[in-house]
Image (cartoon, rainbow, N blue to C red):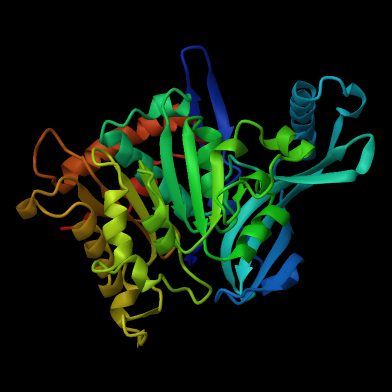
Length: 430
């Protein structure tokens, strides 16, 4: 969830990617300049509501609104049709006559709480088998992160892991397992991006609201096979045929649990390399129990975090109205500042519990980076982060992250630069 400041005028962000044999120009279809296509001018009047229902978990009315998108242009749709045909042929080589597909188009899909708060934005592709026009399926585009705070969380999280000598390249190529926990699901674009681009990633997703999970699957093209039942088994024993075509090789490594985050972390025995937390509710509140340093969530998370390089990234709103531990509204001008009282308290709680401080032998560090164009910040707490064995200093830490960001961009072949998300408003947490 996020709050917008302004839209940049640059039409799109292109990143040059070089290898020993070629130099490719990659266009970022999730660039923030495209937000004008899905942000809308008059709430829902600029889009078409494709799902609408009332939540029983405090998120109010949950809806998914569709908007037309300009990319990719129809001339490029044939490449997706060929990809679908090739995937189908591998899975069903005996059924050649039904293996041709027609792309029907692309759309933005926006998940909203209470008809106002834009919780998530994804791009979906709709297609059908050419022989059966009624066989329409939708597929979320896993390479697109449409909102800057997601790119910020990804950039600072992976650069921090790489700075702790985690072998990201081996994880990307499936030669090493990388355990990831995402708290808060939304439309699912961040866990889907990670599972699709990091072949060794095992991604657990925890979402308290079953309606949010259903909306992401039914209306936002998230893999249905990823859903886990209350027994801990897959909600469906076997994926449907089109799910296999779209997601084989990816959905096996995605596990979406309907659970309270604090209860999940108390029960799990898994140790995580990377934890990503984006858990604002329909009232735009980050639950106090997720940052109470005397509560069970943070204390248990500490034991479930890999001791040598475990990294936690938290999405924070710099201008959110929040409640104190007694449930009273707390509103002050300081909350409008990037490092106001509320954000500072959350940061200090995570750092103190997860890595401690020098006096008690704590290893690691914490920092905050402001998200460009939005009133959000990414808090990072990283274990094992050392700069030549020295006490962390701002410039040394920042230079290390900047150097590692190039490695992240190259190994993942990103369409955007991590640099702006790491350097913007960078502050170490004391």
